[in-house]
Amino acid sequence: MLCDLEEKSQAETRSDVVGMAHKDDSFHEFMVHDVLGGIPGITSRAMFSGWGIYKNGTIFAIIAEGELYFKVDATTQGEYETRGSHPFVYSVKDRGEVMLSYWALPEEVMENQEELAIWVDTAVGVSKRSKKKVKKSK
Image (cartoon, rainbow, N blue to C red):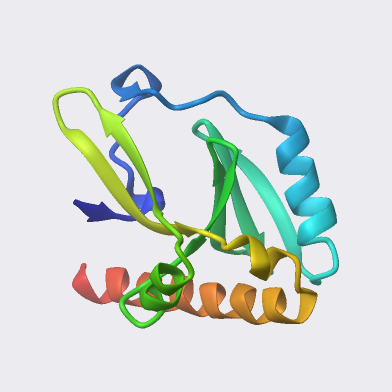
């Protein structure tokens, strides 16, 4: 089942989520300040058992379970698959596994600031497009 983190049901409280790790502040600090720190407009906000990562107010990534995941859609997911990435998946009692439209950022992208900036902008675009789709469907 594919859904957005932002659309997570209020019924899915922390007690419903199975196997989600607690926040790792040092990993968050490293990702936001060291890896993404050279990109203007990056901020983060605590959410659930991790963080939402924003560029100029648009969520484009999450940090969960010790990994950085970028927002994907049908046009970008293939590049993540090609590079051996995997989606963010968590379990909910009585519902099984839930897969979000966020995929782990490949390590080689994290190590190349020029490529990273492109991937950030691409994920921001995906996020903006997905919000437009949600608004149109309401």
